[in-house]
Image (cartoon, rainbow, N blue to C red; front, side):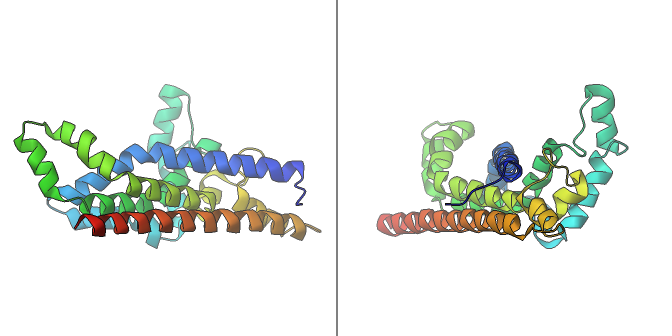
Length: 232
């Protein structure tokens, strides 16, 4: 049985808290953006898709630096929040959650967008011809049918947030008990004498969670594809 130190337990708790809040807080936006990209046609749509997917391409450090410019205490949005709401993202666990949410958002949107695109639009149109409003169609037809994709997107976003390093350490630093996540802790433990064992234990946790997230996503996706084939 693996025995974790108090420091490691704190790191694991903080990491799961940040990843959970990052995934859940971005979920409403992910559903809305996924629906818009799947069902709407508008100018510069491809440009918007490119911007949403930027965190997947940009070095995470760049994303963290941009967040620091915007939400740092001297940044435009950061100064506004601090002056009017006495709230700051910089060097706080909430800032880590924001960074992780942004890094995982493209994966969430992709899964939700694909799930909605797989829904036969004739079903939605039939409901509209029967008098259902677009909002009612969305909540009674589109949203329930796309639940598997939403679950997959949320799971992948959570796993991505749990493994985030570059953006968080740039934006909120590596503060033990506040912003030190599993990835940051592994890096720290590798810099200190006799820290390899702690780094290895946290690495094992990361691998297990990542494998579970991918496996869970594949199982859900396989069931969705199987259901669609049976309905054809």
